[in-house]
Amino acid sequence: MDHLRIVVNYFKGASSDLNLFYEKYKQFVDKYNDAETIRNRLEDEKKKIVKKKSDLKNYLNEWESELREIINKYNNLKTEKVKRKKLKEQKEQEEKFNNFIDEIQESYEMLYRELTEYKNKIERERIVGTEGLITDYYQRMNIEDQEPEMVQEVRFELEKDKYTIKIEVDGKEYNAFSKLSEGHLRTLGLSILLAIAKKNDIPVLIFDDIVNAIDAEHRANIIELMYEDSYLKRTQIIVTTHDRLFWERFCNKASNNKSGFNQEISHIMNYTNKGIIIKQYNVNFHNKIIEALEHNDIRQALVYCRIWFETIILDFCQKERISIKGNIRDRSIYISMTPVLNKAYSEVVNYINKEKNADQFNEYYVDQFNKYFNQIKNDLINWGGQNQEHHAFSEASYNFVHAKTSSEITDIYQAIFYLKLILFPKRSKRYKKRCKSRYGIIEKRINDLEKKLYYEEPINKEELEQERDCLKEKRDQLDEVIEFIGEIEN
Image 1 (cartoon, rainbow, N blue to C red):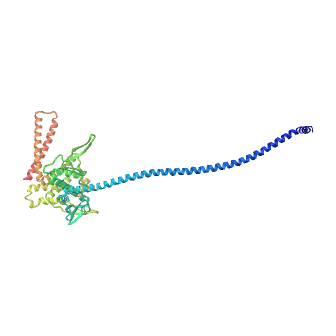
Image 2 (image 1 turned 30 degrees about the horizontal axis):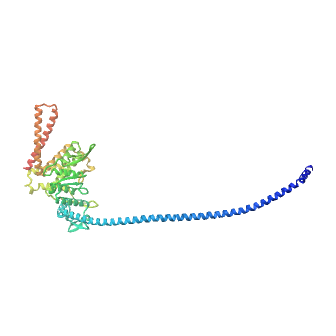
Image 3 (image 1 turned 90 degrees about the horizontal axis):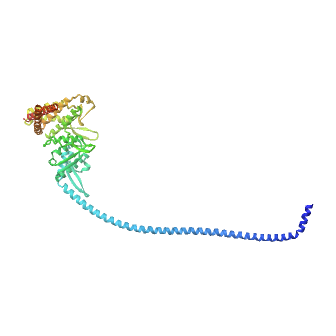
């Protein structure tokens, strides 16, 4: 109660203060209400300003977008202007270039026409008058062709600014490239080159692998042509080849040449650590057989004896124009006419032993021929043991091959050697002269050695005696050959 009375007394004494507080409070409330009104009004204004700001921002964005679009369009127009300028310049350059190309085209066509005319003129000058020579060379290379297949005429025709080769076969005209085989085309090409070279009297000719795709018979004809043609006889020729048998036959043909065997006829390329050198390499059948015998290579000696013998027989048939019949064999792809070697042997024997040839061959000549031929026939020609076409041995001939001894092969070699002397007397005469010259050289050397051994008694006496004995053996062999040739000449 006391507390309450204190509070009431307090408020009674403070009424004036409360009135004053109330007035002030009322004024404060009025001011607050006015501020709230102002605040609300400001909020409204703020919202309006924010909205205007947003609208202005949107307008600004739209304006910036439009401005960027305008700038892009301007840049595009500017770029297009530059492109148009470049295109205009490029067009002008292309027009100039096209005009230049047109001028070049016109000049080229004019030059081509002039060059073609000049080429045709040169070709015409080169080939005019060669058709007969070409035909002759071609027929000599393909002499075994049957009459319906033989090319009777070769001529050139100008078609569309270039020459084509026309051939006449069995009375009909053909384009050479549509009628002839690859081998015949190669012989035709070689014939053209030889005819042009002969017409222009070219002093040096290089033949690079000319027998590629040409069979053995035509290769033999080419070899014969190279040694027998009057133009090629007086021409320096260089022949390269990958074919070993062609190389050997070509070089061995040189031994039958009228001028004698040229020891420098054959060369090979030898690879050394100092580079490539070219050296002489003798490939005649004689040396091949002797070399094989020195190394006890019976098989190789037999093969070369066989090839050498066949070469001699076929050369003799060609020289004496002996006809050789052939047989037709079906090789599934084509039918070919091939000479039969045993028939060639028989024809040669009959030719030598005919009575009508008695004036040409004396009795001693015929006896010696039959002696050596029969020896070769019995010892070398074994149809079951050797393959005719490839000069190789069949598996069944193994014992037959190895049954031969070096002395037997030497006898076969000697028989073939003497048979060659018999069949080619003119060559034998030339060989006899060389033997006599060689005989004199050996005889002089023997005399010098004997004097040295008799008077000086040198330190290497044994070596000198061996050399003397070897030379005496060679001298006796030469003497035997010279005597044999003299007997068949008489």
